[in-house]
Length: 476
Length: 88
Image (cartoon, rainbow over all chains, first blue to last red; front, side, top):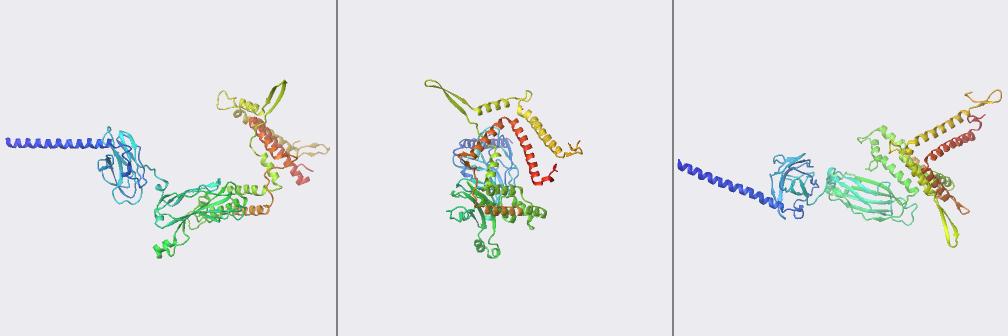
């Protein structure tokens, strides 16, 4: 029995020793890992080990020990784990901090990171896909912390671009914009999204510049069409920002045309049976922007107008104009088909376009001699531009070589008087000045005076002679 | 849109017909007196004055409205003759 007890004690002692060693190992590993993490600074813990190749969010704003955020993660399984590292080597300790108890999740909508302690230092955390990656982005955290709640980002940082949330092929922006007036050296820019499905179809981009006035008013400009980019194949999906050399252009009207089209030959070679019946003129994007370099021409402006409106009516091509959206109502195959709206769109003049046409009529026709003098006269009279008053001065000889100069500046007098009037405020409401208070009253009195004068004249115009030869009015 | 295109074409045709005429950019100078500059300066100074003394601006607008009414009336009399309102 005693022997059994001694064996049990020995076993207990052994187990206690083992447990102590195990505890020391655990604690030691913690301190070691802690020490390693401390060595991981902003400079040496660069994030090259975890490149943010998928364009996910870089989360840099979590504090405390429990943090929840909504990552953008769809279409794949992900695990969340923390990592710590020495100067250049990262080790993985998967499972220490896990999403939802360590189970990989599909299509994460919320994630909670639970840190082990409110004190001490935190390490770099990251989220990575652990199974077949299909589509979508994942959030990645590149950061370390030297104190609770103080997160220091490091490594490559990127924010999700417009193509991440909506990868469909489309133009995000083009410069010059539609209707822009630009100076002679035009720095063209194009920002577009290319859908991964379109890239596999071998699409190419063509950016062409047309000079509308070339055959009309600008001598010496011989280029018919200037290909800024001609048939450049787009091989990668996502945001597309081609480098386009700036061009020095003479004054006039221009049209910038961007076409994303599929290579018919490529499609035919890839799958002849499928692509044999594909329209070789298939374009997924065809957008035109009309712009003016310094000064437009009368013919060029009208030509652009007609082009824009015709393009809107056809409506088959994607256009940045809202009229194109409206034109879709005329397409019986389109989901937005609406006969009434279509008829309205076709036959009721658009107010903005009408105003533009009238402005161009004024510029192109009404400014011609001799009626142009009347237009110029009306333009001057209706101008709201202000001109400062002239200053007057005179020098009087006093005696010998001494002179006395007296100046008179009507502008200063006017400004001073105006400032004085504006400085009079309502004593009960300092924000209301003299003009705010009395302006409407004076306007009302003058308007009433005008109305009474005209009304009196109108009533007097109906006066007629009575039998005695005198005049009386209808009221008499 | 069809109406807009039609108007554009009309303006284009009329513009093309008169395109040979010189464009007036300023009023002429007669005997060294630049009418354009004088008017621009005068109207500009008037605008400066009226912006400062805004009640006068209201009065001038009122007076111009009455003058416009009389001019309209004169035009009607000229066009309609004795058929104009108040005429015999």
